[in-house]
Image 1 (cartoon, rainbow, N blue to C red):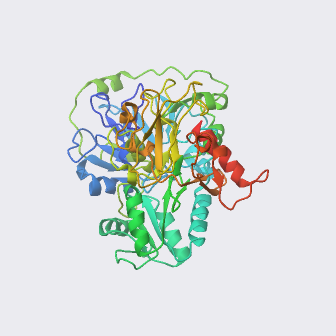
Image 2 (spheres, rainbow, N blue to C red; image 1 turned 45 degrees about the horizontal axis):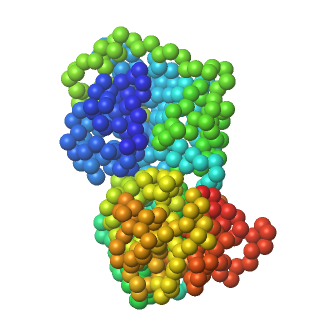
Image 3 (cartoon, helix red, strand yellow; image 1 turned 45 degrees about the vertical axis):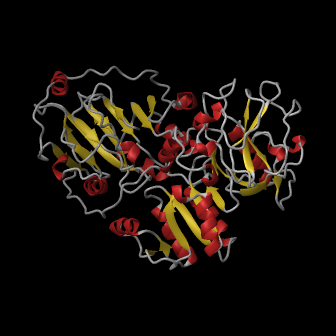
Amino acid sequence: MNGKVLPDTPIAVDCWQLRKCHHVRLFFLSHMHSDHTSGLSSTWSHRPIYCSPLTAKLLQLKLKVKEKWIRPLETGEAHMLLLDDLGKERLTVTLIDANHCPGAVMFLFEGYFGTRLYTGDFRYTPSMLREQCLRNTTTIDVLYLDNTNCDPTRAVPSRQQATQQIKEIIRTHPGYAVVIGLYSLGKESLLVELAMEFKTWVEVDRERLETLRVLELPDVFTTDSGAGRIRVVAQSMINASNLLAWNKVQPTIAILPTSRPMVSCHTNVYVVPYSDHSSYQELEDFVSALCPISLVPIVGNCLPYFSSLLNPCRKKPKEVVIPESVKHYMMTNSNIQTSTNGITNMLQRTLRPESRGVVFESPESKLSRLNHDDGDSETDQDCILLDMSTNSYSQENGPHNKRLKPIQVASEDVVTIGSSLPSDDNESISTLTDVRSPDRSSVYECDHKSPTKSSKEKSPQMGSTNSRERCSSMDSISIHDQTCVTVALTLPETRSVTAVSWGLREENRLTPVDLPKPAGDPLEAAIKTFKSICD
């Protein structure tokens, strides 16, 4: 769950675990992704929820939260909320478009505690700094920052660049059907742009179509099978079995738009770095422009990267003195208000109607949960992706707490592993364990215990390795670099021990297909990026 309770206040954002925030009286929801609504359901009856008008409609539509508990606040306008029962202390809150998903907002809080900006999930654009509330604010005391992509070694392209890469992939496959894997819903603007570019319908299932119509998008979606070249499916449907079936009917490629460092192990699957979160450079620009006194990361630790960008005038935030009336308000279980009398719109404007929408599930967080699932949700034959992100590495396997390394070997070959094969601890590997059926190319896992090879049984260490780390169909992989260059690579056939590719760490073992490798070639840049991900 990505939520916070603001210290020394009765305020919480995206935090619905009442046992951890029993003193909270004002609950705010930044957007409707599932990792920000964990604990929120139709039974909510604790306190009012403050959010954007579109998110307010989504709460009723998808989570069935009763309307009396929802308080929509217009974006771009300052609103005053009571912080006690006596009306002595007030809070001013302004909602700012977060450029993340429909209804997503940032919250600018101002009160006795100073000025605090809570970004929620956001994709930074310079136009955010032109918001009136930020231009009028001289100092941000605390910045709560979405640091999902807080990795200076990984550049995340703009959504426009990623969209162009997807278009190029489709253009280079004339006559192919295109399947796009998405979680729940999201990236609607991408689908609309592709439909317009290629002048085709986008085929979706009936449930997805109903939700898209609620969003009042252009009429480019249909449920008619075969009506369009582009089809949207759940990302979990992008597997080897379905690709085989689809290609029997018509040549088909699959595209996965995600910012996670995924590696495709299938020639017809393309992973594109499309993200609705700010890149590291964008985060740096945002923090540098705001120059807050202190910074609190929402996802994890990122302070070492941004400490030099904080306000140098004050090294420590000012001490917050909680007014007595607010203390009493936080400690008492006073009657819950069901009217809107506690809200004052400082600009006295009526709320504009917003189109209804869907619950957007964050692809990154959903994929993270899949990769950490102890059980295998798919068979090894269906697994076609390797997650190369840091948190996908097993912390239990190997003497140095590194995950087991896959080795691709043709199934008909007899493989002998000896001391000539390098290992992290400079010791010979005694076991090679097959995790695939004998009639197909296999991915092998190295085990330091047993001296035998088995094509049916998994080693004890492999029991804790997720199926996505034991991917099959390793005949080829595709990778992308920060310039959106997609590179297809194949693993050579293995006829001797010297040809065995030791995991994915030795990129020189990977052979490029019909691509030169001169100095400065995008292929080299992609390989270097790929190596840095593996390391």
